[in-house]
Amino acid sequence: MDRRLQLRYQVLVKSQMNAASRTAAGPSLLPQGTHAAAVTQAAWRFYNNPRVSLAALIQPLREIGLKEAAQSSSEFVLLAHDWSKLDYGTHSSKQDRCQLTHRSDIGYDLTTALLIDAHDGAPLVPMEMHLKTAHAVHSTSTSPPVVTDHHLDQLQPIMDSSREWNLPRRVVHVIDREADSLGHYRDWQAAEHLFLVRSNDRRVRWNDQSWKISEIVGHCESSGYFQGDRPVEYHGKPAIQQVAEVNIVLDRRHKTQINGKQYAIAGPPVPLRLVMSRILDETGQVLSTWTLLTNVPADKADAGQVALWYYWRWRIESFYKLLKSHGQEAEYWQQESGEAIARRLLVATMACVVVWRLQRETTPQAAETRRILIRLSGRQMKHKVESTAPALLAGYFVLLSMLQLLEQTDHTLDQLKSLADNALPFINPSGNV
Image 1 (cartoon, helix red, strand yellow):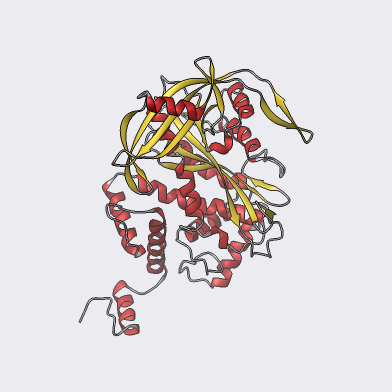
Image 2 (tube, rainbow, N blue to C red; image 1 turned 135 degrees about the horizontal axis):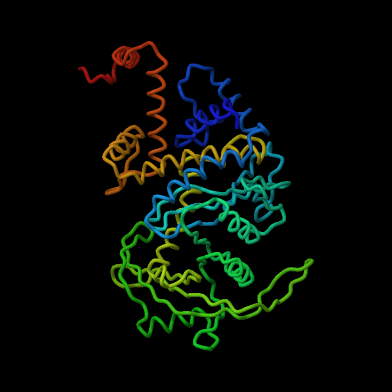
């Protein structure tokens, strides 16, 4: 981007530093002395400018990702892959919407690869994003997928690209059970990628016998394999996590589509670790059980660490919430094309990254900043919750508005107080009776 576009980008990031309103027709406007229509038109030109490539917009985010990963004390960094639909069923002006699931489910399909600190689970930055429309996939990658690619077909190109980002830590790719696919395991293993996937109840070979994973879990429960008492949260309530582990082999045929027909293909056996994690309440009742498959060596990450890594995969779900109903309200944006939406998503993502960086800072100054932003946001925090990302976004916008108003007005703070007193004589902000 040239200098003028970079300045416009910075202004737009500030406009996204806000918990948006669903009823707002456009981005929030800072008190910058220009007409709202002019600011909105400038934003429209930026989001529809073909010279603003998605590859250029992702670059500042990737630079942040490299710096943040370098500061981690872990040998690894996690890259969580997931998909989320953007529902635009009532936005008839968007002519490139695609059918997502059923006939009336219309919008765009968003793919994200989110970098997560493997030491403490902090979300760092999205490193790759695709937005699928009816006619194209708008991507930050120089080799984007095609419209007909299945979700799982998008994974290995991102895995391969991650080696070109020069990350200072080895990447572990963390994916939900949609990616439990033997054919893909064989491909990833052959390409020497490390992965961690939640499994379905498939048949595997254990101790030279064929077992269903659910049968292995039952055996481990009855034989006392589960150990540990790590405290975690489950749906916001305190719980205990226990883990067990066995070595298994996947050696069956895998299914694949060739020219529209399904075939069963033989392949090399894939030795993996089966890590079982269960969550118990304070009375010992099992609330949830996960079965995870990984090729991360046991001497590099024990079963408890692997289970915790998958637990942190939820950060990408929280990111989608922050883009949508918990902050940016992306499903109410008025841009009229998927390409414009994709550009705005990357701008909004930078605002999310700013908030995440503030949340993980441990300095007294950062703590004071969070406290001030929460006060400015007007949000009520739960007991023992210092801050939330949506509340910090809301507070940031108030703070930026205050600073810009003071910088661009000839009035002193006392004069602004007097103006407020005169405008609201029964509610005296200066505190004078």
